[in-house]
Length: 243
Image (cartoon, rainbow, N blue to C red; front, side, top):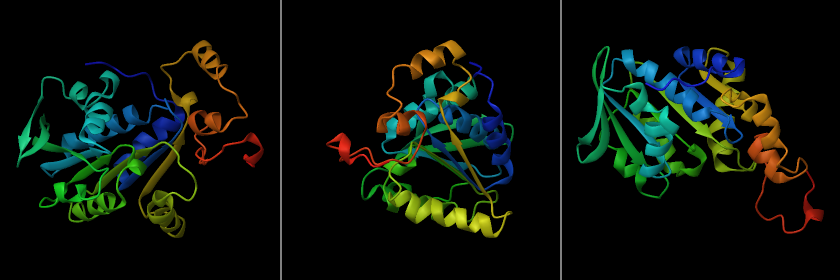
């Protein structure tokens, strides 16, 4: 089994909060370790979860496989090495896992297109992990929420790179749950923001070298490195960048 780099304090806090929060959202810049972090928490929770059927998804099945099952060698197949096999369940791709509490079936789905929500109907999922959630269909994400309603230990995980503030995911999903969390601290939203500085697999020298390749005044740096919600599209001339 490959062992990931130690977690930063920010990542460690998010990891432990996953166990007593039902909605766990990791947002931030690229190479911030979001996939590895959530995958480790997700696999740990699967070990003792009472439900048998679970779901992982992305904008496509390939994305879910790359980001969650593989995850640069630190994914679910690594965590459950020797205890899992890929297969098919009800005509859907899946990963069969032998856990401490019996066999789990984790379905793999794409959710980027209109109509993909039909692929996950017919089951109740104990947990769901959606990678690059803001690239998926809004209807698909809503269906995932609905399909976990009766879970005995409801757990939903989202990871995302930031989009512009007006993106539907913020308006329809995250803002709503953040308001609920503010009104009731026990509501169950676990949100954290991560950047490449949280990635402890990079040395200080590597981090400085990477940052030196970016223009720190650019939208690219703000979004990809700082993980800020910026509208990168449509900036034809620098004079129109009013950030």
